[in-house]
Length: 195
Ligand SMILES: *[C@@H]1O[C@H](CO)[C@@H](O)[C@H](O)[C@H]1NC(C)=O
Ligand SMILES: *[C@@H]1O[C@H](CO)[C@@H](O)[C@H](O)[C@H]1NC(C)=O
Image (tube, rainbow, N blue to C red; front, side, top):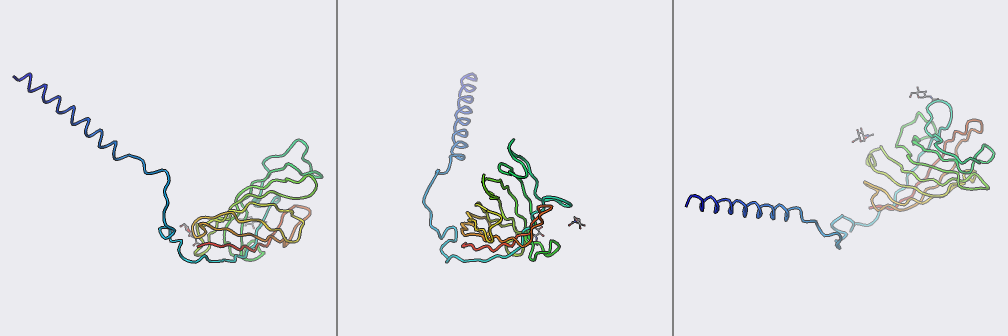
């Protein structure tokens, strides 16, 4: 009799364990991989805004406080033939051409010399803003930069924070270029649609 009771008890315990295992399984059931949602649920029903940002970009490749470093090159890369060189940047962005002026963010990313015949870069970088309502938001730029052209246009391909769903373009214009060091200050006008 006692033995039967024990068996019943262990069967019940087993059942309980299985049931609770099942219910914990149900709790981690995955959400659907994809579904349609309304733009309103991400507050995208409001009209898009068009913003214009203006600042100066400081590309310091030599001297004190370097912010652009060459990390790779091809065996054929040289000063007279820079094709194949790759640099990583964390360049300051300021409100005026003076590097000591108010900072608004950093340009973080890479550029590579991708033309066999001219000084032209492929640039892929993020503007990481730290000013006012833009603090913590980013814009992603990827484009072609023939550095000796007066104005170079590159696409803004996206963004984060206040710049979610951003698209637009930048105009980069050299403010000063030091032929000896290669250091440059570049004026940026950025035009972006965002919500
Ligand atoms: C480099 O950075 C230091 C510290 O911020 C600053 O005092 C110095 O003036 C900078 N040098 C140049 C050439 O900008
Ligand atoms: C930007 O945000 C960071 C982190 O929230 C904060 O520490 C910093 O003071 C802010 N900067 C400005 C200029 O508002």
